[in-house]
Each structure stands twice: as C-alpha cells, then as structure tokens.
Amino acid sequence: MAHLFLDISNRLATISLDNPPQNRLAEQMIGELDDALTAISRSDARAVLLRAAGADFSFGGDILPWEGMSRAALRALFERYLNAFNRFERLPLPVVAAVQGLCFGGGLELALRADVVFAAESARFGHPEQTLGIATMLGGIYRVAERAGRFRAAQWAFTSEQVPAATMEHFGVVNRVVPDAQLPEEALAFALKMAQGPTRAHAAHKALLRMWAVSGIDAADEALFDIAMPLFDTEDAAAGLASAIKAARAGQPRPVMEYKGR
Image 1 (cartoon, one colour):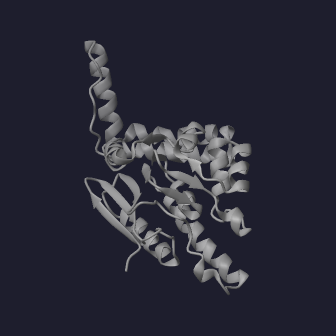
Image 2: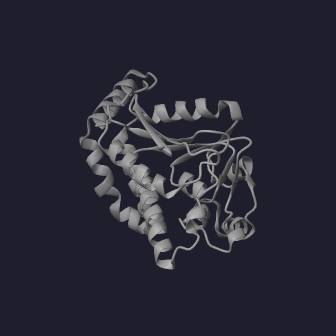
Image 3: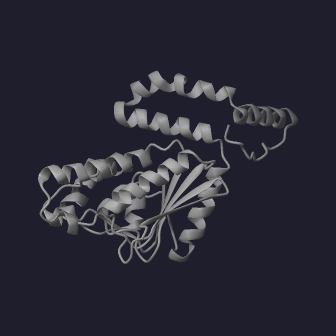
C-alpha cells in the first residue's frame, strides 16, 4: 500500500503523505517521493503543495526497522532520505507545505524543505531526536537556525520541546498560521496562485536564495546576473513588462497577469 500519493492538476502537483496513523516516514516513502519528483519534473506542474492526510502531519521517521541495523546500513538509509529530501528542496518550482497536528523529526525536516509553510493554529513542531540520544539526521537543526537563529535552534533541538505554530511563525520558521479548519483551503489557494505565476522567475529566486544560503551574499551577487538576466528573454517577462509600461503611460493600475510559465 502506498505511503505517498501524487496528484497533478491545474498546473499544481499535490504530494500527500498517507501512512496512518502517524504518517511515519518509512523507507518505502523514499522511493515513492523520488518517483513523485520525477513525475513532477516531466509534467506541466508549476507549483507544488505538500500536505498530509489525518490529524497529524508526521511523527517523523519509522524507527522500528533500525533495530539491529549496522552503522553502515543506517548511514546508507539516512543518505537515501537526505538525497530525496534535498531533491525535493531543489525543485525549480514554488513549494508550499500545509502542516496540521504534530510535525516531528523527519516530518519537520521535510516541511522545512518547502519555500512557504502554512500551519494550523493547533500544530506543534519539534525535534524528538534528543530523546533518542541522536542528532537531527536530515539537516533539521541548521535549517531551523537559518530561519530562527542559532540559539533558538539549539534550544529546540536540545530540549525536544513541542513548539506551537504561533511561536514558529514569530521566529520565521512558519510563514502563516491559520485556523485549523481553514488550513487546506488557504494553503491550496496560495499554491494555485503560485502555479499561475512567472515560473522561471520563481526558479531564479530559489536559485539565488540557495546560492546565498550556501555561499553568502558576495557569491549570490556574483551569480545574480547569470541567473536573472535570461528572464528578460522569456514570454512572461515580455508580457509583464509590456503590460506594466502600458499601464504606467496611461496612468492606470498595473493589471494582474496570468503568466504562462515560459
């Protein structure tokens, strides 16, 4: 039985975790995520929505198979997870995550790969790894630090405390907190809006943000024009600039554009 489902419609790819009751990220999911990412790359999708079925987003990795595994086998397993998660993070499309209930461990590390995170008011986030005597194995602590700062990331990892959605929003880990009942609708509406946007410009911004995260502002400045200037040759930029110039000359508000993604 599948642990992950993919639907592509209206230029939006929706990835749904569905491994009840806790949406544990079992090894089976890695292959299914890789397959989904390949399907997305071959499709007309222009944005991605990550969601989960059930009351909770995910309790994290399925630890039961780890019993008796050698260190080499565990490392190989974690490398497969990390490669799949990083591939997800590097999609040249806007990625929106909708998080409800509990979002722990590997589930949090997967959500952190999204560009925009919507959370239900009752959602709780945390790194349970400390209670197991291990570290965040998929880059969770430093991805939180990138958003919330080193000291806050250390506190949450050291204590394994359950952090409320409002706190995560305050420290910049979550973009928007919404009432529980409105989470599916609001996250979907935002993702569909992204799917109608200038896809290649979104990809350029993701590339620049990654360059900055990996190498800093100077490196991003060096890469800026190589990444951004080709956008002026796209249909979207031609249409967007022409529309804006026409409106400016007429003294009218700039019209809302529905871009083609090319």
